[in-house]
Every structure is written in C-alpha cells, then in structure tokens.
Amino acid sequence: MARTQGSRADITGPLIREQARRLFARQGYAAVSMRQIAAEVGVQAGALYAYTKDKQTLLFELLEEHMLELLAAWQDDPAGMPLDRLEKFVRFHIDFSLDRSDAVFLSYMELRNLDPENHARIAELRGRYEDALEAILRDGVGAGVMKIDDSRLATMALIAMLTGVTNWYREGGRLDRERIGDIYWRLAQGAVRAENDG
Amino acid sequence: MARTQGSRADITGPLIREQARRLFARQGYAAVSMRQIAAEVGVQAGALYAYTKDKQTLLFELLEEHMLELLAAWQDDPAGMPLDRLEKFVRFHIDFSLDRSDAVFLSYMELRNLDPENHARIAELRGRYEDALEAILRDGVGAGVMKIDDSRLATMALIAMLTGVTNWYREGGRLDRERIGDIYWRLAQGAVRAENDG
DNA sequence: GTCTATAGAAAGATAGAC
DNA sequence: GTCTATCTTTCTATAGAC
Image 1 (cartoon, each protein chain N blue to C red):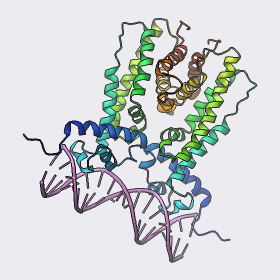
Image 2: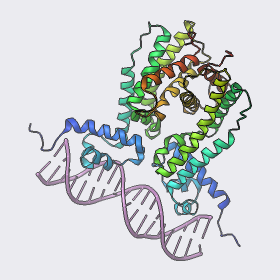
Image 3: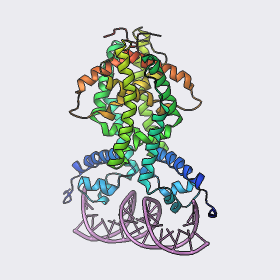
Image 4: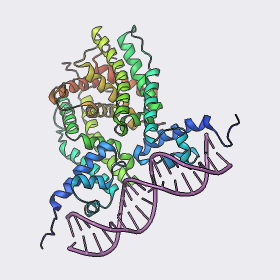
C-alpha cells in the first residue's frame, strides 16, 4: 500500500501530543484552539481529527499517559529500609516533576475540564501513586523510624510540598537539582520525624 | 437623582465578582463566557460592561483583591517568639485558604491568563506574602529554635504544603479544621527542626 | 443600570478532493 | 494522511432604547 503523499503519521501523532501538552499547560485547555495546535505541528486543523476523536479526548489521553508513566517510573522495593525508600521517593518525585512540568501542571489544573468518567480514571491513577507513598510512611512508623500523626495527611502534605518545586524552579537558577533534592529530603525527614537528624 | 428602574448597582457589582470567581475556579477563565457569568448574576451579558472594562480586567481585579485581602489579614508580631509566629502562620494560612479556596485556586491557575503587566503586579504581592513567612524562619534560625538549610526553599515548601490542603479538604470530612491545623503544625515544626518535639 | 440587538471574530468539527 | 472549504455555534464587546 503506497503511502499518501505528505503523510507523516509516525511523527505527526507524537508532535500533536507534545504541542498540545505544551500549549494546554501554558494557556489552559479552554484557551487553546485546535487551529493553534495544528499550526504548531505544521498541519491544518482538520488533520488533527485523524489522530484524536475530539479535543476532550486529546486532553484525557495526555493526562492518562502522564499518570501511567509516573506509576511505571516509580519502582519501590518494599523490602528496603523505609527511610531509604522515602529518600528515593523524594528525589524521584522532584526529578520526574521537573522533567515533565507541563504535564504535572496540566494534571492539577485541568482535571476540572474532564467529564466525570475521565475524571474518575485520572483520580484513580493518582490515588494509586499516593498510596505508594503512604505505604512507605506506614512502614516507617511500623519500623519505629518515623513519627506521624496521620499518614494520609502526611502523604498529601509531602506530595504537595515536593510538587510545588515546579512553581518556582528555573533551569540555571541559584540551586541545581541535586542540591534541591538534598534540601527537600531534609525537610521531609524532619516532617516525618526521622530519627537520624542530619 | 432618581434611580433608574431595575438598577441594583449596590448588589450587582459584588455578585458579578462572586460568580465570576466561582465559575473561573471551577471551569477555568477561558472556559467561562461573559454570558454565563451574567446568567448566574441574573442580568444580561451587556450589563456586565457597566462594571468591568473587559474580561481580562475582571480576572485581574479578582486576583488583586484576593492578594490584598490575604496581606491585610495576616498580622504578624515581629516581637513575638518565632515558633509562636510560625504556628500562627500555619493555622492562618490553612484557614484563610479553605475559606477562599476558589480564589486560591484561581491565583495559582490563572496567572498565565494575565497580560505581563498584570502578572507582575500579582507576583509582587505574592512575593510580599512569601517574604513574611521567610522573615519568621530567619528569625527562628537566628534565635536558635529552628534549623533550616535554605530559608527561601523552606518558605516555598511550607506554603505549597499548606496550600495543598485545598486540593483534598471537603467540608464534613474525616477531620475538622482544627485537627488539620494541629497535624500540619506538627509537620511544619518537624520540617524546620523546631526543638520542642511534641 | 439594564435591556435588546447585533457586529465581527473565532471556535469545534465534518465533508470531500487528492 | 492531509488539504481546503464550510457548517454551525458561540464568543466578546458595543450601540442605542428605556
């Protein structure tokens, strides 16, 4: 089967997702037109509909892809020491969030633009990730190396604290990523009352 | 001067702001039409323009009003003990944020929809609030009752952690506000290595 | 101050040619 | 797979009557 002249399906698909993610994050889902996405990709607006059913589906797939990649990237070892696992989580979450700040921003800001069914799916995936951190905290309390009043609130507090890095981090700023990881790890250690005070 | 029939300027103005804030927070600035705001208020779309120059100005004024009220509501006593001031800040920030969760969400999500001049104004007001917390942390370090690697990052981390409460808090949920304040105050104490371990 | 009416621009999505 | 063209809807903002 001969390829249609001008067809570049192998690269157009990913490009659409990349540009949509970038534009949605910078201007907001509702503020971005399909024409605008198409222009960034270098096609006409009509061509987008060969790749996505509609704009809503495009948003949902971006968010679902992000959450699935987040879950796949986080590899915990439940047999490890809770403090080591927590340190790994802290550094992982910061690095992953900074690497994908557009998707992170989207996944917080545009949940409201999903219809109920799609919203429930993303919330479920997010809950699974939160559960991963909460398991570490519970194990830490069980092992006597952390003191936590409420593991669910501590989970939400830590994730919010870590994700917040995306709000102010700028490449080439005062602190590099490793140093930021060090500092946040110390903050997290204190918050969960880890014994080994650095 | 006789009032025009049907005129209710005293209540329409505040109503417009209230409904705009609510709708912008729930659906996003770009997704909300002036017609929709007008319908919630109970007037026709054209009437809105007697109160605001345009949609952009309406958003900006909501954000500026929120930041000014936040700054006005926070009353610090620089002569007080740093730990007392920090506890007061933690509880204040949570309560204020929960009381105005729509405005809080807006002030994070819709900065990107402000033109550069308006954006700079809001960023300046936010910076002033951040400085207020940072001053407490610096005083705490100076007084030897806190141990902090980097006061600016600790400031950003604490504010993100506290503001995050708005992401999951629901009225009538498992924990009441005071208990939430207790738990977050313990987390904050630990993060800044306050000596009086509870 | 509020209404009706509308100008003018832009949106999402589809049809059919190539 | 992509293009051009277009249908249909909706939007912001303004004009003029009351």
